[in-house]
Image (cartoon, rainbow, N blue to C red; front, side):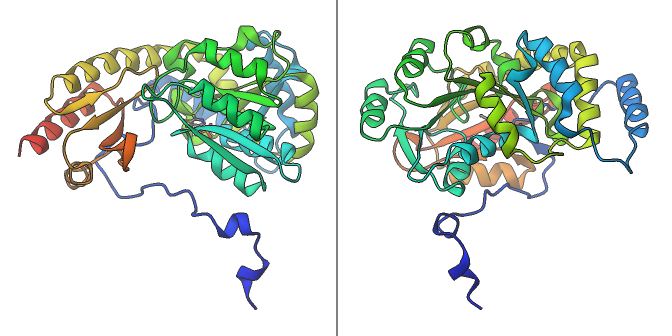
Length: 354
Ligand SMILES: *Cc1c(COP(=O)(O)O)cnc(C)c1O
């Protein structure tokens, strides 16, 4: 049997999302929180997990948690949807809006899951390059919207991998002019402190995504969508009934109970970010760009592939984004612990001067 003949073309045309799995001593490639949960909280968490009845299905639809998050965001329970990471919420949005011929607009470079989920759902992807400052190219996006009206536009704010927040007025222009839903993905909210949440009432096409992954619970896969009740109502039909497993539900509740401990870590990472940025800026031929996230996007005047490989040989994993054009020599490093950052700088200095 020819399996390939059975598979949809959009799927055949893709490569699976690849995650570097090489063993490393210092992992600075995935924008995780590098800090462990404080010991006494870890104990509390273990007790909580031990009390979860593993023989029972999780609470369907995470109703109690949804209510708690809605209260925390100051919105209605009918405006919040939990996902298995925000990745799943991106997938649900695409699946629900992928009418035949539907188009999804994204700026590039940006978070790769927008393209993958849109294509898997059968949507056409309209990719519009960012401008020279990695901000939105409003004119190009307007032209594209006129030629190919998107049902869905994804804007990561701050953007991954470039780290900057697009000019908010430009996002508002898109909210005003886009014919479809505009998703503002605030995955790095805990490090930017900036949000479109107060504008939810003003734009009925605005959807906000949040996640607990970057602030310290990446392993638990907890994402949040906040949007208009009419849309959330439809999206609930698309998600699987038990999309948040019982351990993850417990973890999300734990996060809300202990949020201050996580926010304290985020503040610490923000301080480390400033120190790492200054140290990178002091290296000749390394050009970090201002960032609102827990990572630093930078370009180097050296052979990026060689720098990346040399770092890896010495046990340090970052993300190599180097490609011809505006991404020449581009890389992304996650802010680690102060010791990890120190070692990264030391090894990098060594590599580029050697
Ligand atoms: C990391 C990231 C996500 C994915 O978050 P999960 O909740 O772990 O699925 C979503 N959007 C952006 C922009 C990200 O960088």
